Image (cartoon, rainbow over all chains, first blue to last red; front, side):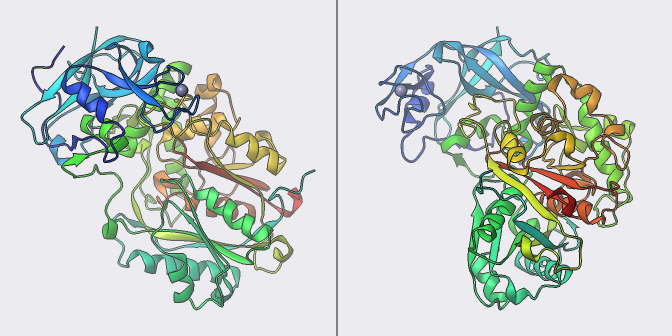
Length: 148
Length: 393
Ligand SMILES: [Zn+2]
């Protein structure tokens, strides 16, 4: 599903694909509302973050595949102290580390949307929320999460 | 036994630090701070600075070894080494590199140093200000994950969840550091004691870190002079030998976007056994521990991964009484450490470990013979080392 409002106040650095193109399919996928991660064409396993070689079989033939947007809350943090001017009036916010069982348990980072004071339970089922910023410069999509 | 060891081959001749300042308060630029610390360490050792023939540092220290050698008029430069990795992970690794150079005949007299002037070069505890971000940081920074505290809090939360660790264990680490700082006139937090209520009432930086779980940000410099063991008795202090020093991290600790397989870890599971193996001691032999505190949670995991207690014993073991000198079971961070003495990327911890062997600590552990340092938990590579008195050889 897609978010109706951004989770964090504007002003943080916006993500762009790496200059060498390593993670470009991921960011392109998010803009289409898809979770696309690196998957090795040699051994068929997902790996994340992306790399130029498969750490399991050393294949250099790394492909990309869409995967499920359902995950498990692996860890979390509620951040209080702003370390960027854009967050000076933000108040507490939550960063989630999400494990993806459908993608060989790789982990990915996002915010956990909803009440910033919500109880946080490691192991909770979560699902992706696509936060689109089509009119931003540059246009981009953030991958957020919500407790199911 | 294998001769591929540093055990007993290198000694510490002298140590020193500059005055320690709050971040941005140094009256001197960073390179001058480094010079001052090195000259003081040479004076402490009774060594002519011109005889330094090697420099070893870490965390991309900006005070270049060749410039330093020229500035000090050293006779020659035989060794110049930078340990890869950020934060304080290289504090003992730089000692290991210097020691390896001496033990293998590459250099005679190597200075390990670290200098920081954050007023000159910007603060650690602030997020970057760029408009766009790419690479691994693009996967964290737009979500507001951008400081060292953010980088590590989820490791500690996962660990505390998995093992039922209570906040009081982290608090005990902070209380012990502040207690020791009250005896140390060099400490930035000297005269500013901490108690349980003050800790509990302090604001969250990021859960589970209160303000007092986080290291300071400081300006200053620290240095130590290493020589071969044959010369250990040529200096003003009691002999202090390096028994072991290693660095590294476990399998794929550097996997990006928080994908390290053994996530809830201080990065020491494979490193600590190599240290004990080299030093030929075990955790029960260690008299006093200096354990790098970027955040108290990292100290907690370091202590477990170095075998001082199990994960399930943390709540019982990490108590104020157990961690304070001279009477505690494991006196910890006896100068005040990074929390309360100074954040010199942890090289102050190595200096304090040596002072414990010399009997010169402001919170001395009586008869300390085996003195250990763990540097830079949760980053990669991390490092650790053990110093010993003459009796331990
Ligand atoms: Zn593969």
